[in-house]
Amino acid sequence: MSEKKNILKIVAGILKSMYEGKLLLRIKADRLFPQIAFTFMLIFVTILVNIVVENNLAVMQDNKSLLGELEITCTQKKYELITLGRRSTVGKMLEDMNSEVGEPTVPAVIIK
Image (cartoon, rainbow, N blue to C red; front, side, top):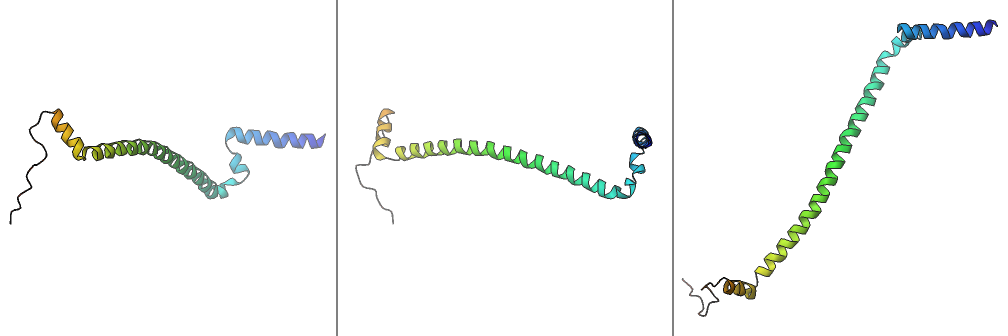
């Protein structure tokens, strides 16, 4: 019986000190306050770094997909430029536009 009363007294004392806000003082945690504050600061910094890294990875993923699309567009433009560089294609385009410009019949004059 006395053991139960002692345990009940201890639990009641802990609950009372928790209610009054003196639990940390009762267990003498005030001397450990700098370590506790440092630990919470490290936890906060770790969470913050994880959030920043996750945001950067999301941006990188978006940029990666955009880069893939741009590479496809670049390849298409290169193909168009290659086809436009052929003499036969240029001649056909000029004929379609009814242009008077055509392939030279006389060789170019070299100016010295």
